[in-house]
Each structure stands twice: as structure tokens, then as C-alpha cells.
Length: 212
Image (cartoon, rainbow, N blue to C red; front, side, top):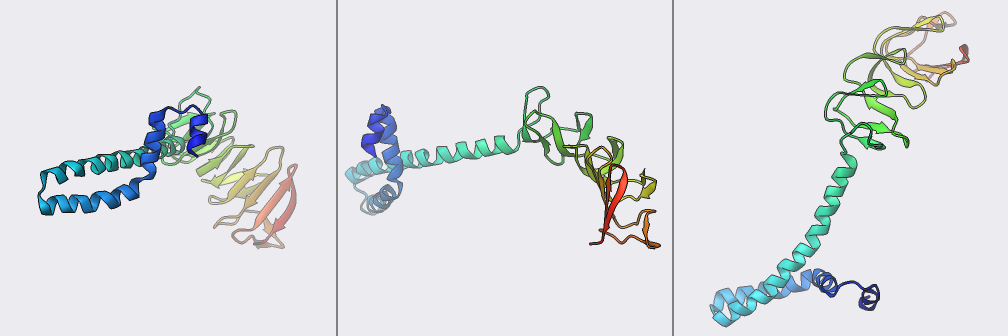
């Protein structure tokens, strides 16, 4: 391994620090008994000698700690990046305050997600709002058109869908409703639809009703 490092033209001091970093536990095993003897015997020469492994131990500890701190900082920066408009950011970003992204007001209480072009795909809205024509609450996905839980009654395809219903609107009349606590005005065989019933529309026409 040492030959490989030298072949890469790595500075000698980096190689030395790397070796010291690998010797943390052996150094600790040597330093502890020497420190104990220096304290018990009270010999000046032994105390002076004790400083050598002690310094090496401290250097070894720093060599091992610094990369861990760097990784921790990198993790925080990766997972808690603050959204800045126009910076071409992608993935999960944190918000410093209520922020409008692509026409949707997003709350700082949860991360927002941006696609590879920097467009909003998902966020939590701070209060019930109309998102692309749909009354939404909570977490909203706008990757295709809109996916959210209804915050109020919503009339679509001649029926009224109640608050608490999950709506997955893929555009062009292709919509899926997952019935919430209150049933819609749509019935099946004269009976109200139970919670979690899935209702599919294709091109604006009723395609299927699937009970959970």
C-alpha cells in the first residue's frame, strides 16, 4: 500500500499522517500505561518521554476526526440545502420560509423536491389552496399535473368529491380518486362508496370502481 501511495506522488507528510491515523489504537495502548507510570513514579524523564506518544496520539485522533466532521458537514449540506431561485438546484431542498416555486406556495416545514431541470415535483403547502384547479391540503405532487388530498368539496366529471379524498390527476381527463372519510355523490348500485374505494376515469369517462 505504501508503494502505491508513493507511486501516486502523494506528499510525504500526507503519507506520515495517514500512517499515524492508522496507529490510533496502538498509540492509545502505549500512551495509557506510560502516562500512568509517569504519574505514579513522578520521574521527569518519564514525563518528558510520555509527551512523545501523547502528541502522536492527539495527531492520530485529529486525523481520524477531521474526515468524519467533513462527511457530517457534507451530509448536512446535501440533505438540508436551502433553496435559492435560479441556482439550478435539483433533488430535495429546504426552504427558509414560505416560498412560491413554479406557482405553488411551499412551506418550510418539510423539504421540497425538484426534478433534474430544477422544476418543482413535490412540496408541502402551508395552508389549503387551489393547486392547478384542485383544492389541496398538505403534501402536493405536481410532477405530472397534481396529486393531493382534497381540502374542500371538488366537482369533477359531474360528481362532487369530498374533502379528505386523494386525487391523482394525470391530465387529459385521466384521474384517480381514492375515497376519503366522506363518500362522493357517485354511487354504486345505489350505495355510497366506502372509504379507500378507488375510482378511475379515462379521458373523462368512468373506467372502474375498485373497492379496497
